[in-house]
Image (cartoon, rainbow, N blue to C red; front, side, top):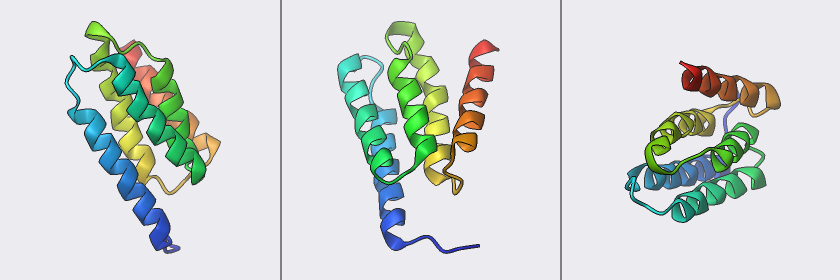
Length: 107
């Protein structure tokens, strides 16, 4: 197993902090503020080539998150956490994580 550079560990830690802030937002938080944080996560992940994080954040940006649908955002947030820690950063990992969200939303 290859060691990850310290810089990438710091990026992952920053993304986890932003995700924690996102999770702590009240369901009454304006969708604009929620999406602003998601966009910040996506942009940081894109800058460092963390494709699964980018793809899940993109999907969350398109998902309905107002009112009662806000609870479905938890599925995306759970996968975002997984994606941040994922060592595989290619499209296949992204597709698998997005599929797991789709299956849970359909259940």
